[in-house]
Length: 246
Length: 197
Image (cartoon, rainbow over all chains, first blue to last red; front, side, top):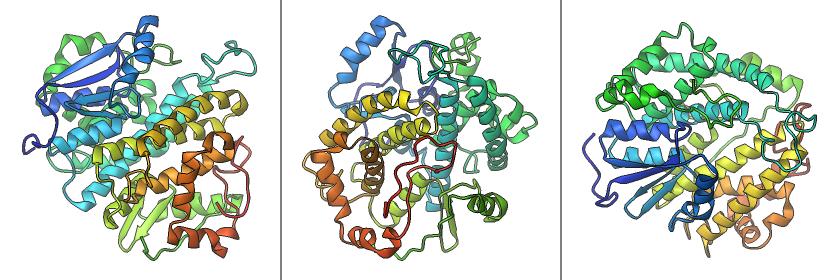
């Protein structure tokens, strides 16, 4: 990277805001911030009645947060929500974005493909009927068949994982020796998926090598060897049918 | 943009399925085979967002504020994906109120963001306006009363862009049946068929 783009941000460290104890959609941003070496504050909202209350009553109304959602990033006067928008923003700020058009296109296809899979994993793991007034868990009307969804998700992975295996033979998503922002999205979400459904990832040497390569990156090595990472976190929220916390 | 283009529809039938899954999917030299795909000379691209962003860069239809553009793009995708998920659920009717709650917040955010417009980013039409337009038609088909007022006027402004208006009135557009989702048995809500989109 060629150093921070001076147009960006303010004097304070950036602030990332998300639910406490959950990797979810924010962890890729944390990993990217660690790799970049940008000082940051990670504000966690407790997964409790009080925490939900703070989100709904106060944090959601942060001035300048035009499309309130979590995670969001605060960088001086700039507020960015939507994890993909945050990743692209930080990528541009630090020059970790594709430079030529061909790479830009490839990057965006890969970005969308991994997001597609993450969205499917979310539908597979979260019961959409939870919290709907009048629907009792397990009743006929609101049955969420997680195992059925999981079987379909496995089929989808069997279709798409080979494409990632092929892509990552080149090292990082765009080839070359340095990652760009999309590599952190791919790392994080492939990790969610291989923990959830290991089968389609068996024997995928390129993917395994890529995952190790990311974990060994300067700025990330310490994180992955540290206590906090080793203690484990929820991959999905604790209410999910599969949340990934051992 | 005034670009020349040709559309290659694959029909939503068994025959169409066989054509895509049989010969086309793995036979077209796409790194991540998927629909829609676009071919521009030697260039082959999948993923609607990647395609739109490519065209946005090519035809100077990118948002002036990049971070805000990305945020609006993703927010638009978010709710559209949610609608897509519930539309394929047999319990679509139970899930619809959850979607409607999100839709109302979304419409409010979009309307506030746009202000007087005339488009999402003021005078400049961007690729995001076409995403918004296409998805708002879908939301409107499900819940017309939520798409009244300023957002309806916005839809009208996009539809009235000269080449868009021409397309919408063309025989090629009006002579076809368009659904919002894949109209097969596993889809509970595909969107009402009718002439044009």
